[in-house]
Image (tube, rainbow, N blue to C red; front, top):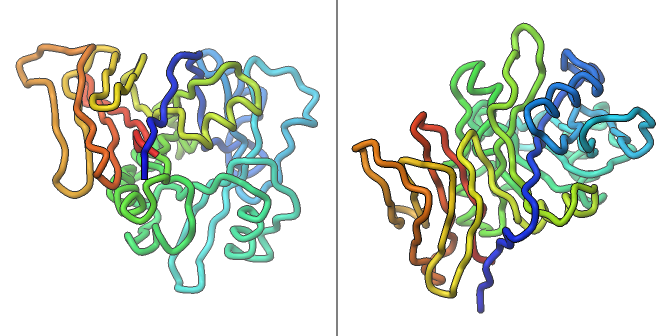
Length: 292
């Protein structure tokens, strides 16, 4: 099968967050307060993912300084007893907590939502849990969980998912609550490359994987010539091309020298290949699987 390069970085980058809670569920701020706060940090869009709330941003007549998009977070146990939090991106109707986790998940899938396994490290999900349900994405970083108990890293769960399905996407998210016990925000986000910041354009780019996830570093452009990936980034200490198991390559050094332009060969026979970059502060960013 011929693989094609997933990314087109020739358009505009838009900053957004896919995991946000408001006073509609267990968050501490209104949609207006959240929009003003995030807009001040350069955000262009946010998803409303309150617990078990069928959001309807399109019918909200309030004027906001950024684009609100619909979503929902489900939580509960499946038939095996495994505990899940799942972020569903998209406009959903008729989902009720009383019906239970599996019914909610089935309904979200039937309605065409993008289904993301949220903070699997914090939830105690096994690697088998990652492939029991057809997740479209995995949170590789969750900022609130980093604050709560350090269990913010979902990379090993994403790796398990990629070995099962190389189209599973990576998400870095805030899981914002902005209450006294959950103060963090603007610690993890996605950067989407799209022609405009509208609901259809942003959703299409996310579904296609034309975005990267970050806790700080920026990817400015990527180009694949059929053999090598050519990348331009903000200054980083390390760049890594990551494949299955032990496979991969790296650039950079511990001597303080920073890089912004580099290339890697990409082997099309690997099940998956993604790029990870790391800045001076140890903050990282990740692409999705580069080839599809």
